[in-house]
Amino acid sequence: MELTPINKLLDLTSKVAIITGGARGIGFGIAFRFAEAGAKVTIADIDKEKADGATQQLKAKGWQAAAVACDVSKADEVGNMVAETVKTFGSVDILVNNAGIFPNILVMNMREEDFDKVIDVNLKSVFLCTQKVARQMIKQGNGGKIINITSIDALHPSSAGLAHYDASKHGVWGFTKNAALELAPHKIWVNAIAPGGIATPGVEKVQKSLELPQGVDMQKLIESFMAKIPMKRMGEVDDIGKVALFLASDMASYITGAQIVVDGGVLLS
Ligand code: NDP
Image 1 (cartoon, rainbow, N blue to C red):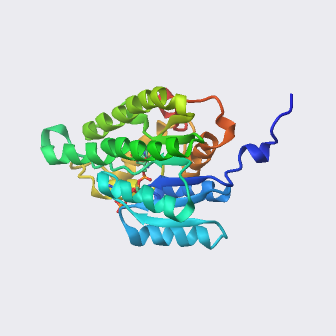
Image 2: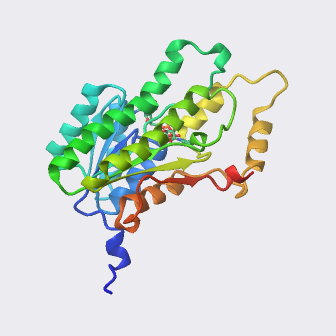
Image 3: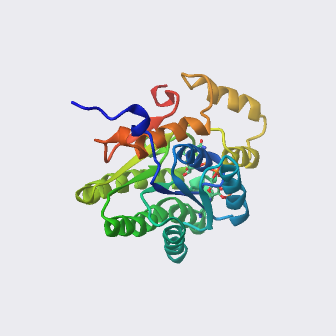
């Protein structure tokens, strides 16, 4: 049997990828590895200026990238994101549903709009982007890869104050499996990555905004969190970028409807 050489398996040349929330954090880590593997990358983010900056970093390496402003919870902006990508690069072959928010609010203090916002940005967006991109992929007729960034909170709660977030991420995991079933006949493989604690600007922002009860020290809280991680370190964005590259590539030729946990072993503790 003739086996495809390893460098060809990881080669994304000729592929076009959209990464939502790709201007920073995990999304940028994924965009970096995809661009390095040869993909043409659309960085879609709510903040156009940040998306432009991220795109410049990839272009400075000689890679191909474009920025699109998109609030993933708005259907018309998602439609524009797909249309702009097709106009710029000619197709869409890979979608990473990464954009997400994780404000910490106890259920007892949560307003209806707090709940709706998290569900819209984290869950409804996955439906909107998947539908628009899958229609494009079906039209192209060459299949495709859809990767949803869930969380270990799709499986087990990590802390109080994230009930809306956990509901959204459980929802994305359910959506992933059902969309995988529906889209398999079109050779569109749909999978999820469930990160544990990854050091990103978003996590830093949440840590700074947390209202701690009197006498509770943030440093001590971080130390007790780290103590629960068997690998004894926070994840880095590239820990997720590498797994996303695996799922987007021909390395993952027989995987759909799966969720890969990338958490340094934290769910074991
Ligand atoms: P960051 O906040 O660092 O980056 C997310 C990016 O998405 C930001 O550029 C943000 O813009 C953008 N964004 C926010 N809302 C929207 C929107 N409505 N439309 C388009 N873009 C938007 O987050 P992370 O990199 O930490 O997280 C990325 C994903 O990974 C999320 O889905 C998160 O739930 C998931 N995850 C993260 C973990 C972690 O420990 N970091 C753990 C488990 C899962 P802006 O900065 O302007 O808000």
